[in-house]
Amino acid sequence: MKIKGDGDSSYAKNSSTQGKAILSTKPMVEKATKEICMDLQPRSMVVADLGCSSGANTLLFISEVIAIISEETPANNNNRECPMEVQFFLNDLPNNDFNHNFQLLEQFKQSIVRDCARRGLQHPPYYVAGVPGSFYTRLFPCNSVHIFHSSFSLMSQIFLGRVEKEKLDSFNRPMYGPSVDELKQLVQESQLFDIIDIRAFDLTFDPIDKLELEESATATTGRPYSVHEAIDNNHTTTLRAVTETLLASHFGESIMDDLFTLFACNVTRHLESCAWEESSIMAISVSLDTKVRG
Image (cartoon, rainbow, N blue to C red):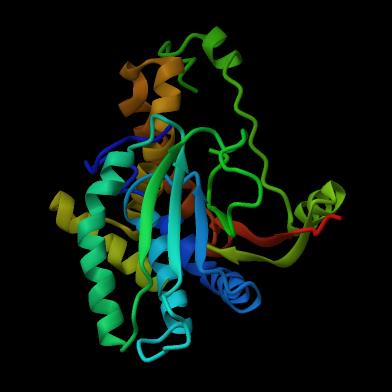
């Protein structure tokens, strides 16, 4: 459950790491989209973004797909009677801020038109709709979607007397980061998919990212920020945008500011005591194709 809207603490304003992951997986999205265009040649393509959340990252994925299809059907291509249409379904839990996404669409549409005109391409007719609900349940009719996309969608205070021990003991949110080999094994054991591509990539801030963060933090606060402070501030706001609603519902709103302030201090200490490569953020991206069943 993420913080809604576009305020300073919102997910929309604090999801740069997720955006970097989407950009890193562009080659896989491009390959899958082109294969569908070439092999199936559908008159219309249906694309579902599972766990779409809200903000620019949602539209970033849509823009990638539109750009790829535009390159496959340039403006002077008259082979089709009608250009291929694209239907995008944005899925997330019912409490997701779908309205924020829809409010961004008009500006997004203008950006797509300008980008395609600059490159001498014709963008396909496309339509965007929201589909609230858990993707652990059926959301679409059988064999009705060409592409499914999902990115980052799974989802000491006691001693200070701020949190009851019973509340901490009863809070259980299992999280596990598998290796590439473990993920391969799970897919193979399911016997439902073929692995088209799988790769791990590093989302750690590069030197340019670090400099921009430091300058931005200094400009915002009016005081010099070390690169460690700037990065821990980015980590903290990103995590808070994603987890605060969940944590507050269990532990209460009153400790949230202190909790994330303490978290930021811990991140700073960690970064100051280790090499950059030891604080990397790794992600795994996998492209799957459903097995053909008789």
